[in-house]
Structure formats: structure tokens, C-alpha cells
Amino acid sequence: MDGRPPTRVAIRRGRGGTTRKEATYVTEDRTPAVAENPEATGGEEQPKQFKGRKNGLYSEISDELAASMKSGWADTELHGLAPVAQAPYAAERRARLSAAYPGERLVVPAGNLRVRANDTDYDFRAASEYVHLTGDRTEDAVLVAEPTGDSGHTFGLYLLPRSDRENGEFWLDGYGELWVGRRHSLTEQEQLLGLPARDVRKAADELAERAKGDAVPTRIVRGYDAGLEAALAEVLDADKDAEFKEFLSGLRLVKDEWEIGELRAACAATVNGFTDVVRELGQAVATSERWIEGTFWRRARVEGNDVGYGSICAAGPHATTLHWVRNDGEVRPGELLLLDAGVETHTLYTADVTRTLPIDGRFNDLQRKIYDAVYDAQEAGIAAVKPGARFRDFHDASQRVLAERLLAWGLLDGSAYDVEKVLELGLQRRWTLHGTGHMLGLDVHDCAHSRTEEHVDALLVPGMVLTVEPGLYFQQDDLTVPEEYRGIGVRIEDDILVTADGNENLSAGLPRRSGDVEAWMASLA
Image 1 (spheres, rainbow, N blue to C red):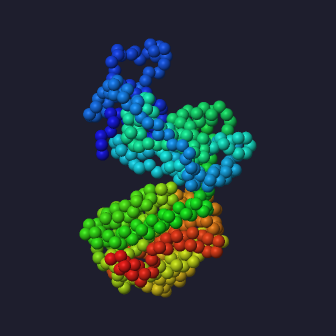
Image 2: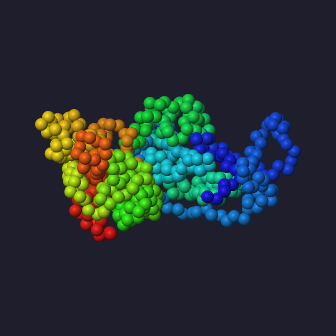
Image 3: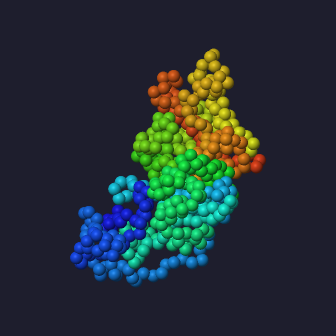
């Protein structure tokens, strides 16, 4: 990484929620020191003194260089931009939001950059609530809904404008455009998103002043922007904010046609990523699980934004660890690889798919027996996904099949328990701990904060997208199963769309039956 500019002036709200402030950059100090007494300067705030970065190679900036950097730049303003594809859908979602909270001010932040170490940040990923309502994915942004009376709202955005050339921000600030790339102007963003936009550096002060100056109830989505929460602390109510988050989560339960298209694209790219992995299993055997992780990540970055979550590349006994993301183990022929991974599209919708693959291309008899049991459980679960069915039905159907197999294999005592008692007591969970699926969309575990009565306790309707992912996991140290079972883990997961007449498997491009998996792997060898 190239060296940073001489300073990173704190003009952003991005790191730790520090309130944005516009900065003035000062070049070499060739004048006598000015007294700190404000009266000495007529009470005006003095410009921020430029200071070189500690251990930086440039400690000063000449007036001549500063003057040179201010001029000679072409006008790059973009005109006639078409709205982003999701703009009309986002507008409809905002209308539903407005109808739910008449007379209230609503604040939905995108979130801030988070420090990884020293002066490097994690890649930014905007809050799903904000993305869903705007189609925008930029850091530090804020959507605000101002009530227009007893009903209705006007919506507007606070966004970061172009870097200022006059004060040197664009080249002196580590987040300036010369360092991190051009961003859209506020006018360009208005064309793209269909919403009026203001400078986000004014957001905290303006919102706080508005909130204190009227009696309008205010809600914010918490956890994304500490600076805004602090600015509005006096008018916020934690319980109302929690309910607001629940509503926005529930707003995503049923996907529109555009969202379904994005999930199809995510699944198609994920199929390509799994294909890449199978083609490169030889390199993984020669190295480690990290090769698998890197191979899939490459596809995610080529066809999408990133992976939608940390890829689980679990070979051998690591497949019995539900969320194995260390991915530092050996990949050995004769064992199984459990790959749980999903591509996130550029618009941040993610797939979530799992396949368990024989590393050498063929299941042995015990592996096949366990795999086929999980496949049958998944088939039962997928068959239960249909309009009018309870959300829980697919889970119950899958768990019943697994309980029956565990009894048939003698791993559960059939003389003491029948399948109904096993399910009542949850005894099968020793080897299949997790639930059989979850909603899918902008988040891999989408709509997780929605109200229970509209999610887990609700009926399925067309447009919902969920995963069906039963599994069996026999730990290496489990003395209750025969030794040959120990260290085997199998999960099969697909992304299922509820349709008007049943369901559609969006990830059907990957084979599931054991024989089909073997034939597919052989075709790629």
C-alpha cells in the first residue's frame, strides 16, 4: 500500500461516529503565531492548522504547491444520469414506511467505516435497512423522513459531497478523492436515487436543531451511527427505536420482482464459484482449505461485490463445526468437503448455498448413507415450502426424516423412544443442532429482527425466499456413535423461492443427489 498523505484530517463521521466537520487546510506557517484568544481575530474560528503525519516523508506544504493543486482540473460533473434500477422499488418501500409512522420523523443511517488497524479500515458495507429504502450503498449517508402533517412524509438524503478542491481536502485528506477515488456529487446522486440530497456534514446539527425545536417524535435505526445517536439522544426512545428496527426488518420479508432477480443472479454466480472450487480441488489438496476460500472469493469479486458472509470451507472433521471459518486445515482425499458459501451481488443481495463433496470424487458407503439421509431430509423440507404453509413446516419435515434415520441406525434407542418422542425431546439435535433454514435477501439471515408473529409463527406467501439446509454432524470425540461415524459432517443447502403454486429452487444449478454430485465432479476433473 502506498504511503498515506501527510495527514488524515478528521472531517468524517466514519471512524467511531465522529461528527463530520468541514476543514480548512493551512500550508506552511510563514506568519507570526496568532494568539488563541478569539478576540484577537475578531471572534472568528481560525482555520485548522495542517500538521504533517508522524513519520511522514512530507512535513510541510508550500504555498506554491497548494496553489497548483487548486487549479487545472477538468469539470467532471455527470449529467443526464438514469435512476438506478431499484429506484422505483425503493420508492414503493418508502411509501409503506411512511404509512406506518404518520407524524413521526424517521432516521435511517447507512453506517460508518470501521477501523481494522491503525489507519486502515474494513471494507464498508451499508446497513441493509438503508440500502433497502434507497438503493444507495455509500458510507456515512443518512435517509431522513420528515412528516408533512397527520399523514405522509418528505424523504431526503444526507450524503458526502465531492471532495473540496479549494481547501485541499481532495488530496490532503486520506479519504479525499485523489486517494480513494471519485464519488458522485450531490446532484448526480439526486438523479440516481430520485431523492434530494444535502451535505452529510450538516446532518447531526440540523437534525438535532429540528428535533429540539418541534414536538415531532423521532425514531432512528440504532447501531450504525453513534454520532447521530448522540446528537439526537434527548429525543430518542429506546423501545420505539427497537420497534422501528423490527418494522424495517419485516418490510423485507416478501421480495419484489427486482429483488428476486438479484437473488437469481447471486445464485448463478454462486454456482460458478462452486464449479471453480471443484476444478481446483487438486490445488486445495496440495495446500489447504485456504485455497478453496480464495477460489470462491475470486468468483465473488469478479461477478459480484464480495462473499455474502465468511465462507465455510470445512474439510474432513472440520465439517462437524457448524461455522468453521478459520479455513486453515488440510484437504485430504477420502474425506468430505463441506462448502457453505454465497456470492453477494453489487446491490448486496446474497446467496447462501452448501454442498458436501467427496474430495476424491467418490463417496464411500458410510459417507453416502449419511449424505443420502440428509438429501432425503432436504427433499422433505423443500416439499413443505408452499403458500399457506407455516414457516416452521419445512423445518419439522426435515427434522422428522433425520430423527427416523438416527433411530434406524441405532444411534437413538428405538426401544426407549419412538420418532414422536425423539422430536418432542429434541434428541436428534445432538447430531443436527441448528434450525433447518432462514429467510434470505440483503442479509444472509434476512429479516432476523422482524416480529415473530410475522416470521417464524407466520404462513408462507409468494415472494418469500428462504434456505432449506438440514445437516448431520458427528463430532470426532462423540463416544455415543460408532467410531467410523466420528468426524463426518454433511449439510445440503439451497435457496428456495415461494411461488404462487409451490416453490422454485434458485440454486438448482448445483447437483444434490449423491450420484449426480459424483458425475458432476467427474465432468470437471
